[in-house]
Length: 376
Image 1: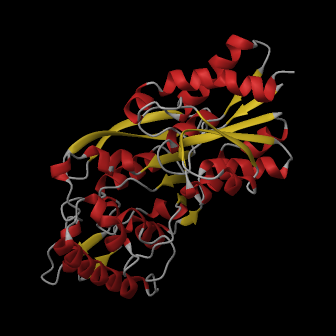
Image 2 (image 1 turned 45 degrees about the horizontal axis):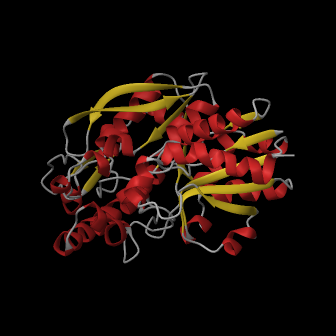
């Protein structure tokens, strides 16, 4: 029997590679003859780089970039085997996880480091760049990234701005003349699962900045600045970006990719499925195991288990899902092709213990799956 394991990471406890590895170990202790195919998957956020590196025989490129507070930090991106495609998670340069609680303030953060990752990849010959938005600490509209790529933002007095959230309202002119011409030949695919526009009540500031440390006063100032910034972009590029899907992602970084780099927005899981050539692997599998840390109603909206199970359903493959916590009625997922949802956490185990023992629980759940779906 051929078993395909394609799960997302279990946030805070296991990477997708680790989930697959512990399941495989559990199965192999029971039946060494099982054929196990492991494909680490991401919905376009955490784990994107590792997923695409693993599937494309790529490698990590480590480098120092400007962090969200303007200080140098260690970061990385992925590079395909042929060196033509780069895989970037913006959170590795501007992630909220990089900041302590008292440092979180989107007035004082910048996306400059993302631009540095792009420049390094382009300098190595990449003409395709896949970007995962998510987990950012920023609300600068992508000014910082664009500035790293040669864009100049000028105030009314002609002062060049540095690209922080607090400077959005000072933008009076955008000068694109110093952008490297090589960027025009680079194809940017942006993994994005939010539809939020750049501004307005559903925009970057009001929806996402509170979780990045913004209080009510900051939000009012940031939104005022973002509206100004949006107007200057539209005047410069002669295009309306106010209602562009995904423009508000990652604090407006989505709008920057669309405006300055002609990026194309793609649903995260669809992009990853295509780049990992997962559909071909599903065609030959006898059983598919997918999952994520918590399966709940959000799973129905572009998350890994539904993306995988929909493909399994297309080819009449049995698909089961595992999770550390399950908070959804099974029936809600049956229509998507998931036959069963199995919680790896033993009944009664507290969350803290479940997180600590997630690897052990994953290893042990292999026996349950084997007895129910594999044993002849």
